[in-house]
Image 1 (spheres, rainbow, N blue to C red):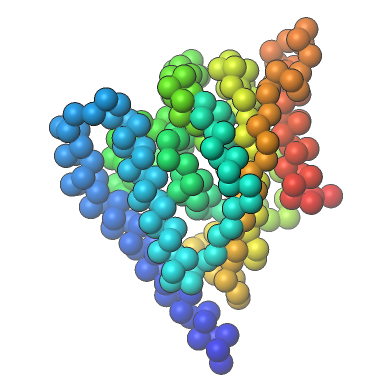
Image 2: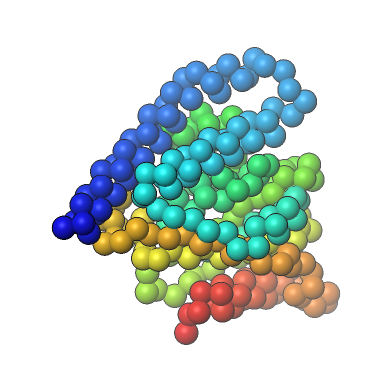
Length: 256
């Protein structure tokens, strides 16, 4: 009986969390962020990114307090080394970017184009200066370089989309190309979810039988140029870095 009560409590609180997130997104898009446009700041994007960080941090604390999930971070002090680096993470769940931004006060990310049309998020995404992945490659690289040069970190999921449980990791070369073109180091973050939830193949209401635990393990920074040979072509360097990242995450996730 207690397990059943716990299950339905988490289901209702999960619904409340998603409803709160959506309503808060609309409210902030109509009030706070338009007002911020008229308030002077030395760097409006950095200020707005910090505000989004605080909002997401509060949202994660709310979900933890409601018993929807639990979160742990290993080697959290290494996030202090994220300035000017690419934060490279695997992508098992819908809320991975929320968890990462909640732990990174000044960070940017490359956002899929559909979210720019989302009424709950479009104004927030624009105010924080997040980068649209549908833009021309050179525009994306220029925006990434600007963010890294000012000391922000940049979150990238090299898989490009959420991983379906049981399927092999499929890394794209976008993260490697950005690392090479922007001369940026990599900070790998391994995200594990047990039991799995909010995967690509599951709707939000398909919650697991027990409370899911999200663990974030922060690795040491990696220099992209240390992985490659100097005389390799850029395309070969990108393949080498992508293969290195795939092997890294396979090892961290204990994949066979």
